[in-house]
Length: 279
Image (cartoon, rainbow, N blue to C red; front, side, top):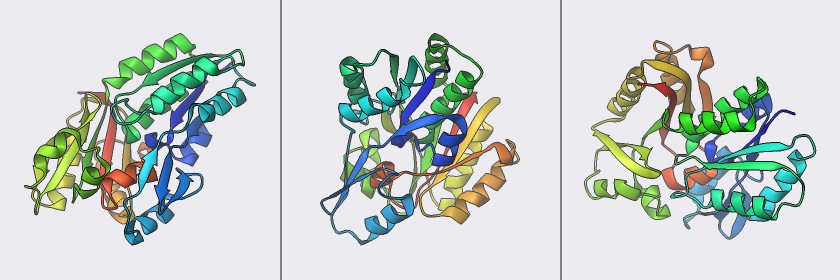
Protein backbone atom coordinates (compact mmCIF):
# COMPACT_ATOMS: atom_id res chain seq x y z
CA UNK A 1 0.00 0.00 0.00
CA UNK A 2 1.18 3.53 -0.78
CA UNK A 3 2.05 5.65 2.24
CA UNK A 4 -0.40 8.56 2.56
CA UNK A 5 0.85 12.09 3.19
CA UNK A 6 -0.95 14.59 5.41
CA UNK A 7 -0.02 18.22 5.96
CA UNK A 8 -1.83 21.21 7.46
CA UNK A 9 -3.23 24.20 5.60
CA UNK A 10 -0.36 26.41 6.77
CA UNK A 11 1.78 24.54 4.22
CA UNK A 12 -0.10 26.45 1.49
CA UNK A 13 -0.34 23.30 -0.63
CA UNK A 14 -3.06 24.26 -3.10
CA UNK A 15 -6.07 22.03 -3.83
CA UNK A 16 -4.66 21.44 -7.31
CA UNK A 17 -1.28 20.26 -6.01
CA UNK A 18 -2.95 18.17 -3.31
CA UNK A 19 -5.19 16.44 -5.85
CA UNK A 20 -2.33 15.77 -8.26
CA UNK A 21 -0.02 14.25 -5.65
CA UNK A 22 -2.57 12.72 -3.28
CA UNK A 23 -1.76 14.99 -0.33
CA UNK A 24 -4.39 15.39 2.39
CA UNK A 25 -4.57 18.92 3.83
CA UNK A 26 -5.99 19.42 7.33
CA UNK A 27 -7.41 22.95 7.76
CA UNK A 28 -6.58 25.23 10.66
CA UNK A 29 -9.22 27.71 11.80
CA UNK A 30 -9.68 31.46 11.41
CA UNK A 31 -12.06 33.54 13.49
CA UNK A 32 -13.27 36.78 11.87
CA UNK A 33 -15.90 38.94 13.57
CA UNK A 34 -16.82 36.04 15.89
CA UNK A 35 -17.35 33.60 13.00
CA UNK A 36 -15.07 30.54 12.72
CA UNK A 37 -13.95 29.39 9.29
CA UNK A 38 -11.90 26.37 8.27
CA UNK A 39 -8.87 27.55 6.31
CA UNK A 40 -9.44 26.91 2.62
CA UNK A 41 -12.71 25.04 3.24
CA UNK A 42 -15.28 27.55 4.50
CA UNK A 43 -13.49 30.59 3.14
CA UNK A 44 -11.34 31.19 0.06
CA UNK A 45 -8.18 33.25 0.14
CA UNK A 46 -9.80 36.03 -1.88
CA UNK A 47 -12.80 36.14 0.47
CA UNK A 48 -10.48 36.20 3.45
CA UNK A 49 -8.44 39.18 2.27
CA UNK A 50 -11.65 41.09 1.51
CA UNK A 51 -12.79 40.48 5.09
CA UNK A 52 -9.33 41.33 6.44
CA UNK A 53 -9.54 44.73 4.74
CA UNK A 54 -13.05 45.48 6.01
CA UNK A 55 -12.96 44.02 9.53
CA UNK A 56 -12.13 46.34 12.41
CA UNK A 57 -11.14 43.37 14.59
CA UNK A 58 -7.92 41.48 14.02
CA UNK A 59 -8.71 37.88 12.99
CA UNK A 60 -7.47 35.11 15.26
CA UNK A 61 -6.45 31.56 14.44
CA UNK A 62 -6.66 28.19 16.16
CA UNK A 63 -5.32 24.68 15.74
CA UNK A 64 -7.60 21.84 14.67
CA UNK A 65 -8.66 19.69 17.62
CA UNK A 66 -7.18 16.16 17.87
CA UNK A 67 -10.52 14.62 16.83
CA UNK A 68 -10.21 16.39 13.47
CA UNK A 69 -6.91 14.64 12.82
CA UNK A 70 -8.46 11.36 14.04
CA UNK A 71 -11.15 11.72 11.36
CA UNK A 72 -8.55 12.17 8.64
CA UNK A 73 -6.42 9.30 9.95
CA UNK A 74 -9.44 7.01 10.07
CA UNK A 75 -10.48 7.85 6.50
CA UNK A 76 -6.99 7.23 5.13
CA UNK A 77 -6.63 4.04 7.19
CA UNK A 78 -9.28 2.52 4.92
CA UNK A 79 -6.78 2.51 2.04
CA UNK A 80 -3.37 2.38 3.72
CA UNK A 81 -1.69 1.11 6.87
CA UNK A 82 0.96 3.87 6.98
CA UNK A 83 0.60 7.66 7.19
CA UNK A 84 3.20 10.43 7.32
CA UNK A 85 2.06 13.75 8.82
CA UNK A 86 4.10 16.90 8.17
CA UNK A 87 3.00 19.91 10.24
CA UNK A 88 4.00 23.50 10.84
CA UNK A 89 6.84 24.14 13.31
CA UNK A 90 5.84 23.77 16.97
CA UNK A 91 7.07 27.30 17.85
CA UNK A 92 4.53 28.71 15.40
CA UNK A 93 1.50 26.50 16.08
CA UNK A 94 0.28 23.58 18.16
CA UNK A 95 -0.88 21.73 15.06
CA UNK A 96 1.78 19.06 15.59
CA UNK A 97 0.62 18.51 19.17
CA UNK A 98 -2.95 17.91 17.99
CA UNK A 99 -1.67 15.50 15.36
CA UNK A 100 0.26 13.60 18.05
CA UNK A 101 -2.70 13.42 20.44
CA UNK A 102 -4.85 12.14 17.60
CA UNK A 103 -2.32 9.39 16.95
CA UNK A 104 -2.55 8.30 20.59
CA UNK A 105 -6.36 8.05 20.62
CA UNK A 106 -6.86 6.63 17.15
CA UNK A 107 -8.60 3.24 17.30
CA UNK A 108 -8.02 1.94 13.77
CA UNK A 109 -4.83 0.00 13.15
CA UNK A 110 -2.56 2.27 11.16
CA UNK A 111 1.03 3.36 11.71
CA UNK A 112 1.28 7.16 11.89
CA UNK A 113 4.55 9.11 11.96
CA UNK A 114 4.47 12.85 12.71
CA UNK A 115 7.15 15.37 11.77
CA UNK A 116 6.94 18.97 12.97
CA UNK A 117 8.78 20.75 10.21
CA UNK A 118 10.24 23.81 12.00
CA UNK A 119 8.93 25.89 9.10
CA UNK A 120 5.70 27.00 7.39
CA UNK A 121 4.14 28.19 4.14
CA UNK A 122 5.54 26.55 1.01
CA UNK A 123 8.82 25.72 2.75
CA UNK A 124 6.63 23.22 4.61
CA UNK A 125 4.65 22.55 1.47
CA UNK A 126 7.74 21.53 -0.48
CA UNK A 127 8.51 18.94 2.21
CA UNK A 128 5.06 17.44 1.73
CA UNK A 129 5.41 17.57 -2.06
CA UNK A 130 8.78 15.78 -2.00
CA UNK A 131 7.40 13.13 0.35
CA UNK A 132 4.30 12.60 -1.80
CA UNK A 133 6.38 12.20 -4.96
CA UNK A 134 8.61 9.65 -3.22
CA UNK A 135 5.58 7.81 -1.83
CA UNK A 136 4.14 7.49 -5.34
CA UNK A 137 7.41 5.83 -6.37
CA UNK A 138 7.00 3.25 -3.62
CA UNK A 139 9.09 4.67 -0.76
CA UNK A 140 8.40 3.11 2.64
CA UNK A 141 7.28 5.12 5.67
CA UNK A 142 10.74 4.80 7.18
CA UNK A 143 12.33 6.08 3.97
CA UNK A 144 9.88 8.99 3.83
CA UNK A 145 10.64 9.98 7.42
CA UNK A 146 14.37 9.95 6.67
CA UNK A 147 13.85 11.90 3.44
CA UNK A 148 11.71 14.55 5.14
CA UNK A 149 14.13 15.02 8.03
CA UNK A 150 16.95 15.36 5.50
CA UNK A 151 14.95 17.88 3.46
CA UNK A 152 14.07 20.02 6.48
CA UNK A 153 17.56 21.55 6.33
CA UNK A 154 17.22 22.00 2.56
CA UNK A 155 13.87 23.79 2.49
CA UNK A 156 14.01 27.54 3.08
CA UNK A 157 11.74 30.51 2.56
CA UNK A 158 12.18 34.24 2.24
CA UNK A 159 9.22 36.60 2.56
CA UNK A 160 9.07 40.25 1.47
CA UNK A 161 6.74 42.54 3.43
CA UNK A 162 5.76 46.17 3.22
CA UNK A 163 4.56 46.15 6.84
CA UNK A 164 5.13 44.07 9.97
CA UNK A 165 1.86 45.31 11.49
CA UNK A 166 0.02 42.02 11.03
CA UNK A 167 2.85 39.90 12.44
CA UNK A 168 2.99 42.11 15.52
CA UNK A 169 -0.80 41.95 15.96
CA UNK A 170 -0.80 38.17 15.67
CA UNK A 171 2.05 37.71 18.13
CA UNK A 172 4.12 35.70 15.61
CA UNK A 173 6.81 38.30 15.04
CA UNK A 174 9.56 36.40 16.84
CA UNK A 175 13.06 37.80 16.39
CA UNK A 176 11.75 40.22 13.75
CA UNK A 177 10.61 42.36 16.69
CA UNK A 178 14.02 44.02 16.39
CA UNK A 179 12.84 45.67 13.17
CA UNK A 180 9.80 47.33 14.72
CA UNK A 181 10.10 51.06 15.16
CA UNK A 182 12.63 51.35 12.35
CA UNK A 183 10.69 50.06 9.36
CA UNK A 184 9.28 53.30 7.92
CA UNK A 185 10.00 53.14 4.22
CA UNK A 186 11.65 49.74 4.67
CA UNK A 187 10.67 46.45 3.06
CA UNK A 188 11.73 43.76 5.56
CA UNK A 189 12.82 40.32 4.34
CA UNK A 190 11.90 37.62 6.81
CA UNK A 191 12.34 33.89 6.87
CA UNK A 192 12.07 31.06 9.37
CA UNK A 193 15.11 29.98 11.33
CA UNK A 194 15.12 27.38 14.09
CA UNK A 195 11.34 27.32 13.88
CA UNK A 196 10.87 31.08 14.46
CA UNK A 197 10.27 34.11 12.30
CA UNK A 198 13.69 35.62 11.68
CA UNK A 199 14.82 38.89 10.01
CA UNK A 200 17.27 38.36 7.12
CA UNK A 201 17.43 41.80 5.48
CA UNK A 202 15.78 45.17 5.04
CA UNK A 203 15.46 46.74 1.62
CA UNK A 204 14.65 50.32 0.66
CA UNK A 205 12.00 49.53 -1.95
CA UNK A 206 9.65 46.83 -3.15
CA UNK A 207 11.77 46.30 -6.25
CA UNK A 208 14.93 45.84 -4.21
CA UNK A 209 13.05 43.39 -1.99
CA UNK A 210 12.20 41.31 -5.07
CA UNK A 211 15.84 41.56 -6.17
CA UNK A 212 16.74 40.03 -2.80
CA UNK A 213 14.29 37.17 -3.34
CA UNK A 214 15.72 36.55 -6.81
CA UNK A 215 19.29 36.51 -5.51
CA UNK A 216 18.23 34.15 -2.72
CA UNK A 217 17.18 31.61 -5.35
CA UNK A 218 20.27 32.33 -7.44
CA UNK A 219 22.42 31.38 -4.45
CA UNK A 220 21.50 27.70 -4.79
CA UNK A 221 23.84 25.35 -6.62
CA UNK A 222 21.19 22.66 -6.94
CA UNK A 223 17.44 23.32 -6.99
CA UNK A 224 14.87 20.54 -6.73
CA UNK A 225 11.70 22.58 -6.22
CA UNK A 226 10.68 26.24 -6.17
CA UNK A 227 7.42 27.83 -5.07
CA UNK A 228 6.30 31.45 -5.23
CA UNK A 229 3.41 32.81 -3.18
CA UNK A 230 1.41 36.01 -2.94
CA UNK A 231 -1.78 37.14 -1.26
CA UNK A 232 -3.44 39.84 -3.38
CA UNK A 233 -0.72 40.95 -5.83
CA UNK A 234 -1.16 38.20 -8.41
CA UNK A 235 0.28 40.06 -11.41
CA UNK A 236 3.37 40.89 -9.36
CA UNK A 237 3.77 37.22 -8.47
CA UNK A 238 3.38 36.14 -12.10
CA UNK A 239 6.02 38.65 -13.22
CA UNK A 240 8.39 37.42 -10.54
CA UNK A 241 7.86 33.78 -11.58
CA UNK A 242 8.67 34.76 -15.15
CA UNK A 243 11.88 36.41 -13.96
CA UNK A 244 12.84 33.27 -12.01
CA UNK A 245 12.63 31.38 -15.29
CA UNK A 246 16.23 32.45 -15.88
CA UNK A 247 17.25 30.28 -12.89
CA UNK A 248 14.77 27.40 -12.94
CA UNK A 249 12.25 26.16 -15.53
CA UNK A 250 9.26 28.46 -15.22
CA UNK A 251 6.76 25.68 -15.93
CA UNK A 252 8.04 23.72 -12.92
CA UNK A 253 7.65 26.56 -10.42
CA UNK A 254 4.74 26.05 -8.05
CA UNK A 255 2.29 28.94 -7.73
CA UNK A 256 0.53 29.28 -4.40
CA UNK A 257 -1.54 31.72 -2.41
CA UNK A 258 -0.79 32.65 1.17
CA UNK A 259 -3.55 30.88 3.08
CA UNK A 260 -5.92 32.73 5.42
CA UNK A 261 -4.23 31.47 8.60
CA UNK A 262 -0.86 32.78 7.40
CA UNK A 263 -2.53 35.85 5.88
CA UNK A 264 -3.77 36.83 9.32
CA UNK A 265 -0.13 37.33 10.28
CA UNK A 266 1.44 38.64 7.07
CA UNK A 267 -1.21 40.91 5.55
CA UNK A 268 -2.29 41.35 1.93
CA UNK A 269 0.86 42.67 0.22
CA UNK A 270 3.29 39.84 0.74
CA UNK A 271 5.36 37.90 -1.77
CA UNK A 272 7.57 34.94 -0.92
CA UNK A 273 9.75 32.30 -2.51
CA UNK A 274 10.56 28.87 -1.09
CA UNK A 275 13.35 26.59 -2.34
CA UNK A 276 14.16 22.95 -1.77
CA UNK A 277 17.78 22.39 -2.74
CA UNK A 278 21.45 22.69 -1.87
CA UNK A 279 23.56 25.82 -1.61
